Image 1 (cartoon, rainbow, N blue to C red):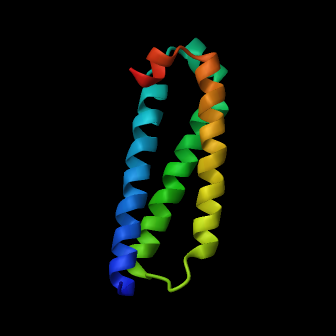
Image 2 (tube, helix red, strand yellow; image 1 turned 30 degrees about the vertical axis):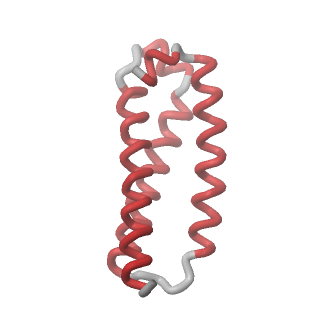
Length: 100
């Protein structure tokens, strides 16, 4: 696979993750003030991850680095941490509030 194809495919994959994170953030933003107060740190973290994903997509589109492994390891670690945070949030907030 050519480098440009790889970068295009990875960019599309990251855009998919960004869309999923955005959907979760939007649902969390619609919670009542009381519910939001319980998960304010998680909401802020999701918004920061969305921005990081956006930065990485732009980097792929304009730079297309030959070695993406450091970024990939960092994003994998963040996605694992985010999954754990979302599990914590689901214990605090009704699943229908976030997932519905």
